[in-house]
Image 1: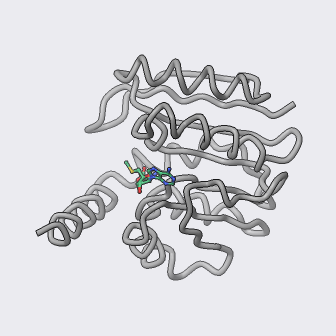
Image 2 (image 1 turned 120 degrees about the horizontal axis):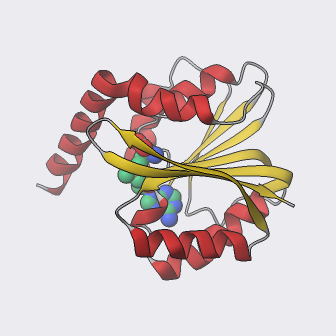
Amino acid sequence: MKHELARLEIFLTRLAFLLCGKSVYQAFADCLPLNGNERVLDFGCGMGTVAYYAAKKLTHGHLTCLDISERWLNACRKTLRSYGNITFLQSESLALSKDSFDVAYCHFVLHDISEDELERVIPALAKSLKSDGVLVFREPLNQAEKLSVIKRQIEQNGLSLKDSRVTDIPLIGNALESIYTKQ
Ligand SMILES: C[S@@+](CC[C@H](N)C(=O)[O-])C[C@H]1O[C@@H](n2cnc3c(N)ncnc32)[C@H](O)[C@@H]1O
């Protein structure tokens, strides 16, 4: 039963990806500050919805797709099977090396993580960025309390807000998109 529910969830996400891929996921990938040669982390990649569009932009760069779930990571491998510039990592982020990425992004991931876990995850993400590296997130706006924890944690870990906006996402509703830079 548990396996069937997980398969259904992946099937429904694949359907949403087919129907709304461009308006939801490509639109976010288009906001990432990429020239094409960066080392990028997709934290909580799921089935690779955003990674599919981000990887296309990295003509001379590299994308690491990280997820805590082996099942989602396998779905991501399938979505990105035609790309050669990807590393897949099953982890909770603590395994990330210092100063590794120019850009890290989280698309609808951080709001789902408990406050205790965020206290480990956000420092690990901040450390994994190079100096001047960029962290981008898009999270649902209706999670006000969690959003203030996320923002506080990010700022306490040496990142400064560069830009922020609210976008209305088809089928999902309003989300906060923020870009932070590491000093
Ligand atoms: C709502 S899904 C979003 C997936 C993808 N970013 C997207 O927008 O389609 C959240 C993903 O984050 C992953 N996740 C949750 N907690 C995590 C953690 N501590 N470390 C890594 N991945 C995590 C889940 O397994 C899931 O694949």
